[in-house]
Image (cartoon, rainbow, N blue to C red; front, top):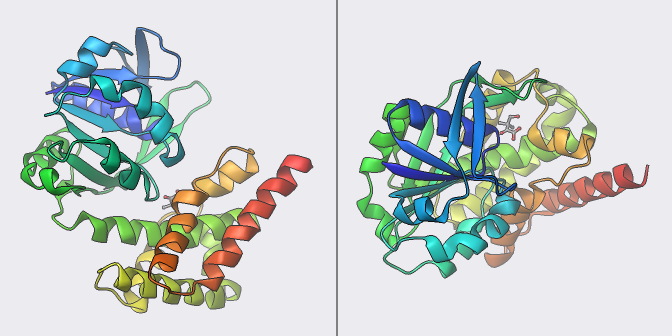
Length: 296
Ligand code: KPL
């Protein structure tokens, strides 16, 4: 396939390299507008064409791997070059940008949503390292996307396992639930993920899980507080020694994904007239933490 990959950060680099190794023609869209970019993963380097509108137009697939808050700015200048039959896949933490993108695309343009659990770290040398293997789920983000089940095989062949999920929103909601508990709590308290296993955090995690269950059920996800809690605990244990991405973003005073994680939970809660005071408090606490860091 001819693939345009937008956003060559950690996850973008992983997929660009794996899809190239699987025989696909990958070109990039990068912020620096250079005509090529060398990507390096686990010591292997590839130089790929970049920012070439002719390649964007000829692509069968656009894979968008930017941070959620960058999607609009990254895509808007190039939507003109999107062929009406090209598949668009969004793969990012959090939820929300699909709502905006769906308003920009013709109804017949296949929109797909994906979530992945692979871990990628950046070494001091600039090389990315594939540190953890995990599943990838992909499924339809609009009506036209339902016909694109084959795309899961393309991803699975490049980097297993990737599976087609007819109800991708269910997978995205569980990932969002995990991120909306672990990320803001570890950011506000300045702790590693494993600290959340301490008994002190149990009451707040319970409240957050209850609110999540209320919102998820209203969104059509069949779930329970116990199921959500189990999934969170599994990830906390598996990543006990890690700092969450939001913890690092606050620490290094970078933009966070708060708006697309806790912000999205609050947006959907408001839509369904569900109260979510613990998410609201956490949302404000992260913002305060960011302001405090900026002024210190
Ligand atoms: O996705 C993550 C993140 O940090 O953004 C988790 C799973 C919480 C791991 O830290």
